[in-house]
Image (cartoon, rainbow, N blue to C red):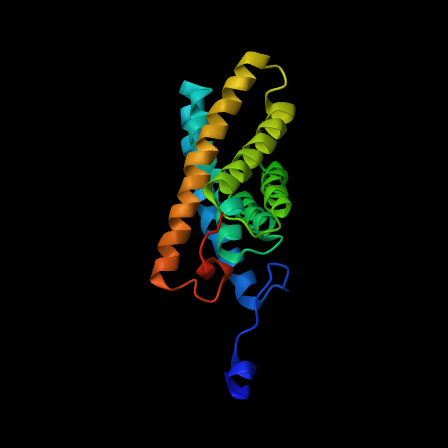
Length: 201
């Protein structure tokens, strides 16, 4: 290898490198797009909840997607919380029926997923890790909802809700985000992001 080759060789990147402008933009776009989706999902959930409670929680996972998809793409600390809060903010601005609490919900969901990715050092992106992050996000959402909305509901029904939410989290937020990330990676649009390195175990 020549001296020129050594100088031009790219240096290895770390998940703890500073966020770049493109990281912020992509995380924000993910949040905004899903914030609009959230607003529509709110109406669907409310309709189902009125007639199928607690089975309506089988679609809960959609609200957790930014907390999983953004870290998969950017692979840096804070992506889960940033994107989930952005989505919650857009949903609230559009008139979410849960009002300002939408922001608190987004915070706990994003923070829970963030903790799982932090535990593995933002270096492991296999399905088991993603599934655990999705379930952690669902668990945080479940605890939040129990305290604020379902305090008088029986423990048995609460646990049934949790099982539906966890299943939805794994399928919609976990598998769905992995499928989206891999599809985007194949198109080449993620070549400048951590996701371009591929998922690792």
